[in-house]
Length: 234
Image (cartoon, rainbow, N blue to C red):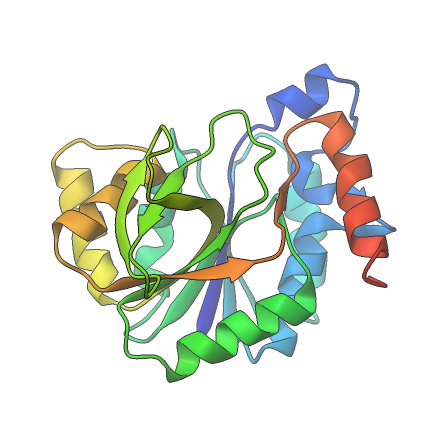
């Protein structure tokens, strides 16, 4: 099973708030966010971790090239206008098997993530999407489900059947790459629109609840993320 990390954004909000390191290299309890993700993925049996970054910060590239000497990283350097475009640029490297995709600033408990990956490995769904009822996002993507946690829609505003928001972790089968290609051909952008198209295309998607997932978008989120991990001994 392959894993992938989208890390091609500029991290402008963190920089504006005085954070000097580029977002992928921001440390949480002494470890760079991107290194933490790669090491967790390897512990979950990753055959390859595909990472896409932009070419604007040499420090990030140099860090990953050093990390690549000891871990199975496939590095792609490409400037893209959105996360969905970044996904498209690395899609051909994900092979013809199940894969897990996330953004570099998505923070979760490793134990929960391990259960999630194991559930996906043995499931027959087309996509198992990480969700949480913890809402601390400026523009959350709400997810509607039925009683069996089958996903029925992705929404910018909450509806009565929305009990979760997207956690930014996507376990998918290669079938989803056909949807991604059609999204690109039709001029769509943003991961949330890709997810909506997955539903429109009739793919079988299920939600997998995490107790909490933290996104590091602002300087104050670094403190929140460190406290969140420390509370679980990470």
